Each structure stands twice: as structure tokens, then as C-alpha cells.
Amino acid sequence: MKKILFSALAMLMLVACNQAPKNYTITGTLDTDEFNGNWVYVAETLRKIATEPIDSAQIIDGKFQMQGVATEPLMSVAVITDANRKMTEQGVGTYFILENGKITMHVDTALAMTATGTELNRVYETYNDLVVSYDENIHTLAESELSNAEKFVALMTERDKYKETLRNLVLPHATTQPGKELIKDIKHLYSTEELT
Image (cartoon, rainbow, N blue to C red; front, side, top):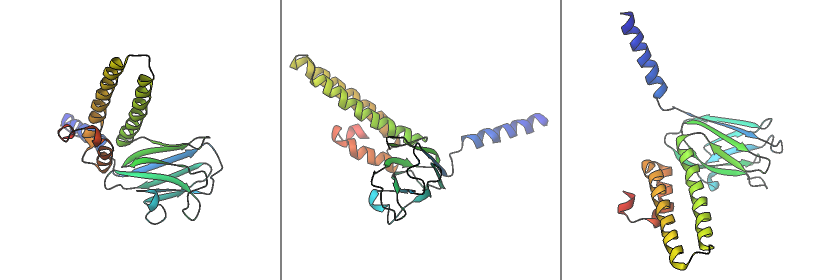
């Protein structure tokens, strides 16, 4: 009987550990005290910061925290504002995916704001890194000493690799609002069949 109870307890603990988070926690730190007393607002778009914010927190001692429930993942923006919800002159903010889980935001001394921590934020970060890397690779190939024929083959190979990597990254999330937004960004690269 003890073995059965122990097994049942172990199964309950395993199931509890594998459940999706039921809320989000955004924890932020700043490497500067310049914004102490200001606010961080989260909204679906920059235009909605003043009229339809999703969440907000005041920056105190270089830190802020927000908690809430995201009914579905949402492409969002976080910005540092003054008390009137107007973006600061420095324009500090970042796009990120608001979803249930632990999200970490950080503002460095160059006033660059980043968001990390959840599955879709990792996908979004990887997506952005891929776009930058592809642009750099294409520029390098275009400026190379290769013949035009060799450049063409190298550029097409790079494009095909890029398309396949993006497709494999984005398609598993195609039913989410952020996935749909990313597909809008890349659909010009694909035929309709390639994105289904």
C-alpha cells in the first residue's frame, strides 16, 4: 500500500511540474538610476501605451516587477514612460512576447532594453538573430571576390538555408498571435504550400 501511495504522490508531483504557468511575472533591472520613479508600461502597440496598457510598474531602485495573466501569447511592447505615459526622451523600450511564465527584462548602460525567458521569447530572439545574420551573410557574399555565377549559387544556397530555418522556427507557433505576426513578416519568401 505504501508503494502505491508513494507512486501516486510521485506522479502528482511530476504532473504539477509539467503544467504550463498560469500567470506571467516580468522582473526588470536597470544598470542606471536615471529612470528611478518613472514607469514601465506594457501594451500591444506603442499607440496603445497611453490608452490601453496591459500592465505597468514603477521603477524603484533600478528594479520593477509586473504580474498578471495572459489569456494567450501576445506580441507586445514595453517602454519606459514618465508619469503621463509619454515615452521618455531617450526612447527606451523593446518588443517582446507577453505570455505566461517568467520574463526577465534588462536595460543596460547604453539604454538597450531586452526581454528573455519564455519559449516564445526565445523563438522571437532567435528569429531576430537569424534575420540579422542572414543580412550580414548576404552582404558579405555580395561583396566577395567570387564570380557572378559563384555568387548566385552561394546566395541561393544561403537563401534556401535561411528559409528552411525560419520556417522550422516559426511554423510550430503558427496558431499563436505572435506566430501569425512572424508569418506575416516572412510570407513573401514562400509559396502558400511552403507555409502549411
